[in-house]
Amino acid sequence: MAIRVAHIITRCIAGAGGVAVRGAVSLDPDEYTGTLITGSGGPLLDVARSHGLEVLVVPTLVSPISPRNDAMALATLTKILRQREIEIVHTHSAKAGALGRVAAHRAGASRIVHTLHGFPFHEFQPRATRSLYVEIERRLSHITDMFLATGTAVAVEAIRRGIARPEQIRTIGPAVEARCVQLSPATRMRARQILGLPADAEVIGTVGRLDFQKAPEVLIEALARMRRPAVLVWAGDGPLMDQARRQVARMRLGDRVLLLGNRTDVPDILPAFEVFAMSSRYEGLPCVIVEAQACGIPVVATAVNAVPDVVVPGESGLLVPPGRADLLASAMDFALDNPHSAASWAQTARTRLGSRYSASTLGAVLSEVYRPGDLESRFEPLPVSRLEST
Image 1 (cartoon, rainbow, N blue to C red):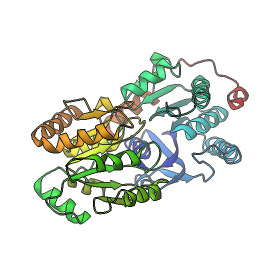
Image 2: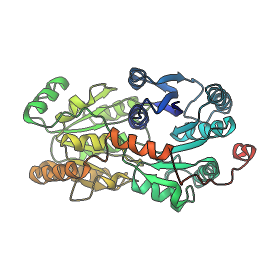
Image 3: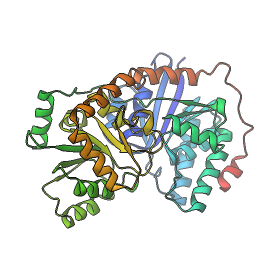
Image 4: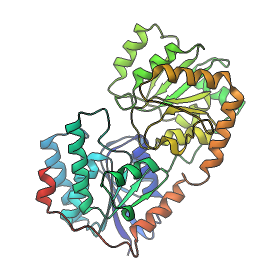
């Protein structure tokens, strides 16, 4: 009989959602039967259904802290896991990771796995808030059998802060979109036609939510500081969209910035970019950077969390400190000024990627983690009441 697995994520969108879905659908259906549980989602839910996964939407599973919604979501998740007699629970993201693991513990799941795409705590929070989140993660580790970390720095941080034991965590490469449009003069021309851009434009591009984490105001300011009259293309939506539009208007960059909103054709438009840029304050390991590198596009990004796993300074891209629009502008100018160096970074990056970031590789890792063999040892569980008291 196939093993019953539940994959739980707060929002089944973007990088984390893609990793969750691509990992779930890569498992052998003869060995595993999957249920995807999410608070919200988009096209990825249809992808999951098309591969035979049961998809359940729990509207009370939301990202912001909401005591009423959180209590209702916890009860619903526990009920679902019990009714379906789920044996393995695999959680993603901070909120689903917390509620999902407590629900799995209550429902008596035989194995609980959590993927760390990053952390709910970061240096831009007040110290008290950061400390509280760290303590919650430490307590949740007592009911977690195995952690998967999307990047070396994420795994190191989890070990350093006592969130996971050394033998309890495994570093993985996030599975990226299998369909990759390779960069060529023809694909660049086609991508720019899709976006309505001139063939000879200098294009800086990025993909991601317009929110605090991604720091869109920094990338827009960096564009204004550049010596070269590049065009910035941002694919993605988010709570800072209106703020970004006002900033563009205030800085009189309207003819140099395209805010596209959400797109379903990101692989098709990536070749339009001469440089892929990322201004994030914090990250795990963004799938879209790997996708850009697989396409053959040089990357300039902020030196945060696990980004240096794939962007090695001066070898496979350039890194700048977060929040430094001046340095980000200089790095993007350098990439455009030195196309041969930029092409070399892109080639080095593609060579280093290999098969590490494929869905099949992630599927093989999940099978090992779900059938742990000699990794059956667990922490002594904390009472659920103590977990919830945090």
